[in-house]
Image (spheres, rainbow, N blue to C red):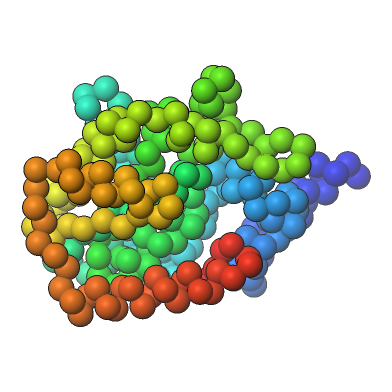
Amino acid sequence: MSEMTEQKRQISESVESYRSGRIRRRELLQSIIRATGSYAAAHLFLETSGLAATVISTIEAQNANVDAESVKYPSSGQFEMTGYLVKPKTPGKRRGVIVIHENRGLNEHIRDVARRFASEGFVALAPDLLSRLGGTGSARKPSGRADEADESGRVSGDAEAIAALPLYGVIDDLKSTFEFLEKHPSVEPTLISSVGFCWGGWRRQARRFSTTSTPRPITRSSTIRVTATIRKHRSSRGSERWSS
């Protein structure tokens, strides 16, 4: 049996165990890392195969009792943005939050953060800021090639593509993301905030200072509750990079 065939068999068995409930998300992700050889290669597989955006998203949204979907909306009249929208199942206007990804793009870690916000009562939108270059997992490098793993398992395509994004293009995409969320029927338009990770952290500040809107702050009690949830998530990652 070839190495590639064995890898496919291991992943297929793990996915089936996850679907049937025999293993949890954490164990699935760990098994994919073992099969592919590295975290970076596992990230690439999850995004290019669509497993993270479909099977994992559906099951984890059900587990968190939230609704999750991929959405599309225009940006600057030239590009189509893709985003991951998650909201509580109960009806009514909710606070909104934009979840801005790190330099690996919109991946399973960011989707999980968005689901955690939704489980705390927010409508969370995580935009894929690589949309204008083809999207996470398929983004064109400056050389024009799509993302790929090298012999050591490192994946540089998404990070290289993000580094090549024009700052004002990113700001335009974030403005469009804000406008999309602002108009969503489940969102209170005066209660929208944002959170960013790594590369997304200072893009969050760029969006904040470039927008003409002045959202009212989230209430203190809500901030404390969600901060505690995210801190728990961050502390549970440890050396495994992903948590359940």
